[in-house]
Length: 188
Image (cartoon, rainbow, N blue to C red; front, side):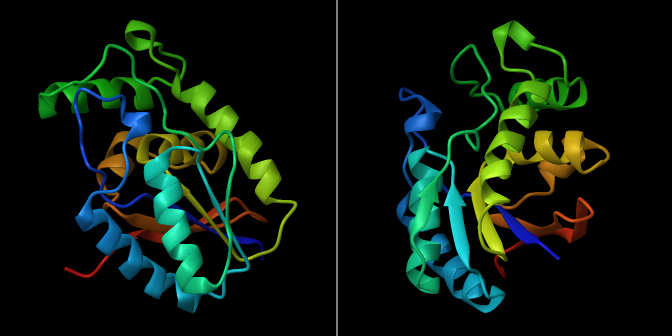
């Protein structure tokens, strides 16, 4: 079994005036990533990867610290890009995410399609497949779900996205492209 833990990064310091791909972890997110690292230490990880976005790299680095591994940034694991800037209304944001995830070929107002995000995520996973297992990949909710919907047959992508805690994780067996359980999050 080639086991990969797909991880949504810890809580970022939200800065609406700054592009989301530049956000770093908040103080809470740093604490969450350390707690997640303690959990991940029990997974027997042999490799840790992340997107090139700071919030994911920060999360992966703290997991790496807890597991004695160096986290490696890999192109392709970045978030599914929504165009149009900050969407401050939660309902409008959810409606946008639903439309993009549930219609994989749809480019809403110039946003990246879920199909395109899934393809680049799969290219990143091809790099992971050449490494050691079990492995962890720290990425972003929409990108993970786009990948799982296209490559692991995950149903109801919007509901799946809504189920992911920050941080949250799920185990994937690459040999059968099979999800092993549901997304988990830190204890309350």
